Length: 276
Image (cartoon, rainbow, N blue to C red; front, side):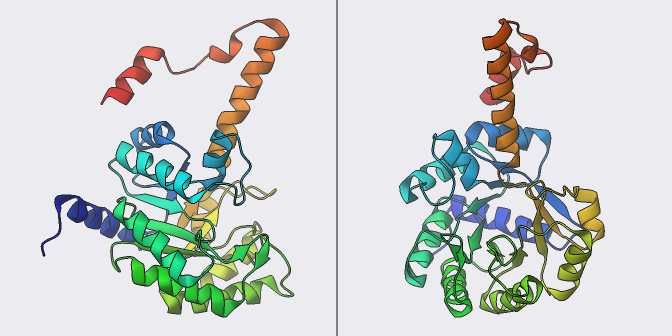
Protein backbone atom coordinates (compact mmCIF):
# COMPACT_ATOMS: atom_id res chain seq x y z
CA UNK A 1 0.00 0.00 0.00
CA UNK A 2 1.49 3.40 -0.96
CA UNK A 3 2.35 5.77 1.88
CA UNK A 4 0.01 8.66 2.58
CA UNK A 5 1.16 12.23 1.94
CA UNK A 6 1.61 12.74 5.71
CA UNK A 7 3.68 9.56 6.03
CA UNK A 8 5.82 10.49 3.04
CA UNK A 9 6.42 13.97 4.44
CA UNK A 10 7.36 12.54 7.83
CA UNK A 11 9.76 10.08 6.19
CA UNK A 12 11.38 12.94 4.28
CA UNK A 13 11.75 14.99 7.47
CA UNK A 14 13.15 11.98 9.30
CA UNK A 15 15.74 11.25 6.64
CA UNK A 16 16.81 14.89 6.67
CA UNK A 17 17.07 14.81 10.46
CA UNK A 18 19.18 11.65 10.40
CA UNK A 19 21.49 13.24 7.83
CA UNK A 20 22.15 16.17 10.19
CA UNK A 21 23.99 13.73 12.46
CA UNK A 22 26.55 13.05 9.72
CA UNK A 23 27.67 16.67 9.50
CA UNK A 24 30.15 18.68 11.57
CA UNK A 25 27.60 19.28 14.34
CA UNK A 26 24.28 21.01 14.94
CA UNK A 27 22.30 22.58 17.78
CA UNK A 28 18.80 21.29 18.43
CA UNK A 29 16.85 23.51 20.86
CA UNK A 30 14.13 22.13 23.11
CA UNK A 31 10.59 23.51 22.93
CA UNK A 32 7.90 23.00 25.55
CA UNK A 33 4.76 24.04 23.66
CA UNK A 34 3.58 24.97 20.16
CA UNK A 35 4.38 28.65 20.63
CA UNK A 36 7.97 28.12 21.70
CA UNK A 37 8.41 25.64 18.84
CA UNK A 38 7.15 28.20 16.31
CA UNK A 39 9.54 30.87 17.61
CA UNK A 40 12.52 28.50 17.47
CA UNK A 41 11.61 27.46 13.93
CA UNK A 42 11.36 31.11 12.89
CA UNK A 43 14.78 31.80 14.40
CA UNK A 44 16.09 29.31 11.84
CA UNK A 45 16.77 26.03 13.62
CA UNK A 46 16.50 23.09 11.19
CA UNK A 47 15.07 20.72 13.81
CA UNK A 48 13.45 20.97 17.24
CA UNK A 49 13.37 18.64 20.22
CA UNK A 50 10.91 18.66 23.08
CA UNK A 51 11.73 18.90 26.77
CA UNK A 52 9.80 16.86 29.31
CA UNK A 53 10.97 19.28 32.00
CA UNK A 54 9.67 22.33 30.13
CA UNK A 55 6.35 20.67 29.32
CA UNK A 56 5.90 19.63 32.96
CA UNK A 57 6.77 23.10 34.28
CA UNK A 58 4.36 24.73 31.82
CA UNK A 59 1.63 22.59 33.40
CA UNK A 60 2.67 23.52 36.93
CA UNK A 61 4.16 20.14 37.87
CA UNK A 62 7.77 19.00 38.46
CA UNK A 63 9.85 17.08 35.96
CA UNK A 64 10.66 13.45 36.56
CA UNK A 65 7.78 11.17 35.70
CA UNK A 66 4.73 13.16 36.77
CA UNK A 67 3.88 14.04 33.17
CA UNK A 68 1.24 11.51 32.11
CA UNK A 69 1.45 9.61 28.85
CA UNK A 70 -1.67 11.09 27.26
CA UNK A 71 -0.66 14.61 28.29
CA UNK A 72 2.72 14.04 26.67
CA UNK A 73 1.04 12.85 23.46
CA UNK A 74 -1.20 15.93 23.42
CA UNK A 75 1.83 18.20 23.80
CA UNK A 76 3.73 16.40 21.04
CA UNK A 77 0.74 16.60 18.72
CA UNK A 78 0.48 20.38 19.15
CA UNK A 79 4.21 20.91 18.62
CA UNK A 80 4.41 18.71 15.50
CA UNK A 81 1.37 20.44 14.00
CA UNK A 82 2.85 23.88 14.70
CA UNK A 83 6.10 23.50 12.74
CA UNK A 84 7.38 22.16 9.43
CA UNK A 85 10.85 21.13 10.67
CA UNK A 86 11.67 17.69 12.11
CA UNK A 87 10.62 17.15 15.73
CA UNK A 88 12.32 14.77 18.14
CA UNK A 89 10.49 13.75 21.33
CA UNK A 90 11.79 13.51 24.86
CA UNK A 91 10.20 10.20 25.90
CA UNK A 92 12.00 10.02 29.25
CA UNK A 93 12.40 6.30 30.04
CA UNK A 94 9.74 5.26 27.51
CA UNK A 95 6.51 5.47 29.51
CA UNK A 96 6.34 1.71 29.75
CA UNK A 97 7.19 -1.00 32.27
CA UNK A 98 8.24 -3.51 29.58
CA UNK A 99 10.01 -3.36 26.22
CA UNK A 100 6.72 -4.16 24.48
CA UNK A 101 5.03 -1.18 26.15
CA UNK A 102 7.92 1.10 25.15
CA UNK A 103 7.58 -0.14 21.58
CA UNK A 104 3.89 0.72 21.54
CA UNK A 105 4.63 4.24 22.81
CA UNK A 106 7.20 4.78 20.07
CA UNK A 107 4.77 3.49 17.45
CA UNK A 108 2.24 6.08 18.60
CA UNK A 109 4.69 8.98 18.38
CA UNK A 110 5.62 7.85 14.87
CA UNK A 111 1.94 8.15 13.97
CA UNK A 112 2.00 11.76 15.22
CA UNK A 113 4.75 12.64 12.72
CA UNK A 114 7.58 12.71 15.25
CA UNK A 115 10.86 11.66 13.59
CA UNK A 116 13.11 10.99 16.57
CA UNK A 117 13.11 10.25 20.27
CA UNK A 118 15.32 10.18 23.35
CA UNK A 119 15.05 7.10 25.56
CA UNK A 120 16.67 7.08 29.01
CA UNK A 121 18.23 4.07 30.72
CA UNK A 122 17.34 5.16 34.25
CA UNK A 123 14.07 5.07 36.18
CA UNK A 124 13.56 6.92 39.48
CA UNK A 125 17.19 7.98 39.43
CA UNK A 126 18.63 4.46 39.15
CA UNK A 127 20.24 2.86 36.10
CA UNK A 128 18.40 -0.07 34.57
CA UNK A 129 20.30 -3.30 34.06
CA UNK A 130 22.09 -3.03 30.74
CA UNK A 131 20.24 -5.99 29.19
CA UNK A 132 16.86 -4.54 30.10
CA UNK A 133 17.82 -1.10 28.77
CA UNK A 134 19.06 -2.62 25.50
CA UNK A 135 15.84 -4.65 25.12
CA UNK A 136 13.77 -1.50 25.54
CA UNK A 137 15.80 0.25 22.85
CA UNK A 138 15.49 -2.75 20.52
CA UNK A 139 11.70 -2.64 20.93
CA UNK A 140 11.73 1.08 20.16
CA UNK A 141 13.84 0.43 17.06
CA UNK A 142 11.46 -2.26 15.85
CA UNK A 143 8.54 0.17 16.22
CA UNK A 144 10.19 3.03 14.32
CA UNK A 145 11.25 3.21 10.68
CA UNK A 146 14.98 2.77 10.21
CA UNK A 147 16.54 5.53 8.14
CA UNK A 148 13.83 8.08 8.92
CA UNK A 149 13.51 7.98 12.71
CA UNK A 150 16.47 8.92 14.89
CA UNK A 151 16.67 6.83 18.05
CA UNK A 152 18.77 8.75 20.59
CA UNK A 153 19.88 6.47 23.43
CA UNK A 154 20.44 8.38 26.63
CA UNK A 155 22.67 6.82 29.26
CA UNK A 156 22.72 8.32 32.75
CA UNK A 157 25.91 6.82 34.16
CA UNK A 158 27.14 10.35 34.92
CA UNK A 159 23.82 12.02 35.61
CA UNK A 160 22.26 9.40 37.88
CA UNK A 161 25.48 8.36 39.57
CA UNK A 162 26.10 4.98 41.14
CA UNK A 163 28.60 3.72 38.56
CA UNK A 164 32.09 2.87 39.86
CA UNK A 165 33.63 4.11 36.63
CA UNK A 166 31.09 6.29 34.79
CA UNK A 167 33.27 6.59 31.69
CA UNK A 168 33.65 2.84 31.20
CA UNK A 169 30.00 2.28 32.10
CA UNK A 170 28.91 4.90 29.56
CA UNK A 171 31.02 3.41 26.76
CA UNK A 172 29.88 -0.14 27.56
CA UNK A 173 26.25 0.91 27.49
CA UNK A 174 26.70 3.01 24.36
CA UNK A 175 28.09 0.02 22.47
CA UNK A 176 25.16 -2.16 23.53
CA UNK A 177 22.65 0.53 22.62
CA UNK A 178 24.16 1.04 19.18
CA UNK A 179 23.95 -2.72 18.65
CA UNK A 180 20.28 -2.55 19.70
CA UNK A 181 19.57 0.05 17.02
CA UNK A 182 20.42 3.48 18.44
CA UNK A 183 21.45 6.10 15.89
CA UNK A 184 22.89 8.54 18.43
CA UNK A 185 24.10 8.36 22.04
CA UNK A 186 23.13 11.04 24.56
CA UNK A 187 25.28 11.52 27.67
CA UNK A 188 24.01 14.15 30.14
CA UNK A 189 25.84 15.21 33.28
CA UNK A 190 29.38 15.30 31.91
CA UNK A 191 30.87 18.78 31.57
CA UNK A 192 34.66 18.58 31.47
CA UNK A 193 36.16 18.89 28.03
CA UNK A 194 38.68 16.07 28.37
CA UNK A 195 35.98 13.50 29.23
CA UNK A 196 33.72 14.74 26.44
CA UNK A 197 36.58 14.38 23.93
CA UNK A 198 37.32 10.85 25.15
CA UNK A 199 33.66 9.88 24.91
CA UNK A 200 33.42 11.21 21.33
CA UNK A 201 36.47 9.15 20.40
CA UNK A 202 35.30 5.96 22.15
CA UNK A 203 31.66 5.89 21.01
CA UNK A 204 31.24 4.83 17.35
CA UNK A 205 28.08 6.89 16.81
CA UNK A 206 27.15 10.58 16.92
CA UNK A 207 27.45 11.94 20.46
CA UNK A 208 24.75 14.22 21.92
CA UNK A 209 25.74 16.48 24.83
CA UNK A 210 23.28 18.78 26.60
CA UNK A 211 24.66 22.29 27.03
CA UNK A 212 23.78 24.37 30.07
CA UNK A 213 22.75 21.49 32.33
CA UNK A 214 25.92 21.13 34.40
CA UNK A 215 27.69 23.78 36.47
CA UNK A 216 30.58 24.15 34.02
CA UNK A 217 28.89 25.56 30.92
CA UNK A 218 30.59 24.51 27.68
CA UNK A 219 29.30 26.30 24.58
CA UNK A 220 28.33 24.64 21.31
CA UNK A 221 31.39 25.60 19.23
CA UNK A 222 33.66 24.12 21.89
CA UNK A 223 31.59 20.94 22.04
CA UNK A 224 31.79 20.57 18.26
CA UNK A 225 35.58 20.95 18.44
CA UNK A 226 35.65 18.03 20.90
CA UNK A 227 33.82 15.74 18.45
CA UNK A 228 30.24 16.21 19.61
CA UNK A 229 27.74 16.03 16.73
CA UNK A 230 24.49 17.08 18.41
CA UNK A 231 24.05 19.74 21.08
CA UNK A 232 20.72 20.00 22.88
CA UNK A 233 19.57 22.35 25.64
CA UNK A 234 17.18 20.25 27.73
CA UNK A 235 15.04 22.51 29.89
CA UNK A 236 17.44 25.46 29.70
CA UNK A 237 15.36 27.62 27.34
CA UNK A 238 12.26 26.97 29.43
CA UNK A 239 14.23 27.99 32.53
CA UNK A 240 15.27 31.21 30.81
CA UNK A 241 11.64 32.00 29.91
CA UNK A 242 10.41 31.29 33.43
CA UNK A 243 13.27 33.32 34.91
CA UNK A 244 12.29 36.30 32.74
CA UNK A 245 8.70 35.92 33.92
CA UNK A 246 9.76 35.82 37.56
CA UNK A 247 11.98 38.89 37.20
CA UNK A 248 9.19 40.79 35.44
CA UNK A 249 6.77 39.85 38.20
CA UNK A 250 9.22 40.90 40.90
CA UNK A 251 9.78 44.30 39.26
CA UNK A 252 6.06 44.86 38.81
CA UNK A 253 5.30 43.79 42.38
CA UNK A 254 8.10 45.83 43.94
CA UNK A 255 7.91 49.11 42.01
CA UNK A 256 5.11 48.92 39.44
CA UNK A 257 7.59 49.86 36.71
CA UNK A 258 7.63 48.20 33.30
CA UNK A 259 11.32 48.00 32.51
CA UNK A 260 10.91 44.33 31.74
CA UNK A 261 9.13 45.29 28.51
CA UNK A 262 12.30 46.80 27.01
CA UNK A 263 13.18 44.72 23.97
CA UNK A 264 10.05 42.55 24.18
CA UNK A 265 8.53 41.32 20.92
CA UNK A 266 5.55 43.49 20.07
CA UNK A 267 1.97 42.24 20.14
CA UNK A 268 1.44 42.86 16.43
CA UNK A 269 4.68 41.05 15.54
CA UNK A 270 3.71 37.98 17.56
CA UNK A 271 0.23 38.02 16.02
CA UNK A 272 1.84 38.05 12.56
CA UNK A 273 4.25 35.24 13.43
CA UNK A 274 1.54 32.98 14.77
CA UNK A 275 -0.75 33.75 11.82
CA UNK A 276 1.72 32.58 9.17
